[in-house]
Length: 110
Image (spheres, rainbow, N blue to C red):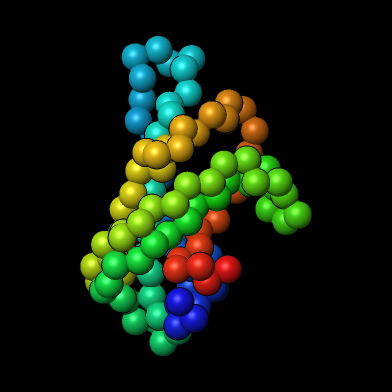
């Protein structure tokens, strides 16, 4: 949606707390990634609504290639807070031996 500032969404990426689901074998990379964020409108007010959110992992911060994409439909956002589990519908098949970059797109807002 246009009222959600792209800068605020990007800032939420910095503020998130990601937590990996660990497997018994420390050498095995998890297929899931917990992701929490905060959404605000253009007035920096926390929103409460349901949104479709698309997550993408890139290999570079600019001009990178998309390595993984997943859409979460009807994500409940309450007082700006939301939480999803990445890899829920599309397996994250990355080795995590390199640095990756996550982006989010709310309601097809680019």
